[in-house]
Image (cartoon, rainbow, N blue to C red):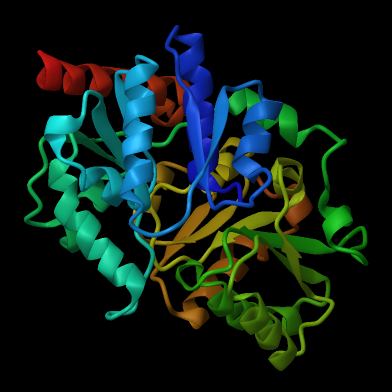
Length: 368
């Protein structure tokens, strides 16, 4: 899909080009994939992208191929945005690398103790010390217990940034899907709140449906739309049926771009159990939407000073119900005063500048 980390990467590359750098998006995927959403979005925005197909697993041969390609093309930095490439490239001896290796850690999803994902996480934790630079998207992420004791060569915090002009432009473009396109039967006067993200356990959408059920009984014209796709779709459909919410809750599937829909929502809910620095909330702030979100990850850092938000502890449906009612339903939402936050920390330009400075420090240490 095309979610927070992918949008952050596209905005970063766009700003890097404006600054005179020469970036290239190397988009890895399994053999047989025609075009990934990231690749289509990059082409649409005129950004340089190269599809790279490889079988899954510990494919060291392809890792070496990436290194050789980067070296042959004269790139100074390989910037990874996922644990798989952190592992793959981190396992290759530093002595054979002629390119500095940097990663951005966007966050960690829940992993069962003896699952494959838990194994990958432990392996990545060990291999972060082999990378030349590590970037975290929030202070909370950098300080979480999972990473305590990990010795890294260089690391820093760089907040995700947003191209607010693009957000404003795309959100008003009526050629893209609007709320009525994804929620058949929605009528004028209905109040629709939304949640956006992968349909996976750490996003807490099952909890959101449980919290929404009593509100749907009290507010006849209240609706909920969940935008995204993933492995929990069937479980969420059963949750909707169990609470008799058919017609009031809509699983809209994957939608891109989602900004026009986001503009039309009356409010945004993010009941996650963990997050890095969610770009969806950056977009909601840019569009001045009321927000209810879990007090996890970088969310408190992001929403510090934003007037139209309520933060709640994760995992409690009753608290979530009360927060949604307090912020979103206690008055006529058509006349709700929008939130405001003038904070340059989260612009794409600031993000790109900070990455350039970090690249230079890493290159200087590796090759200086």
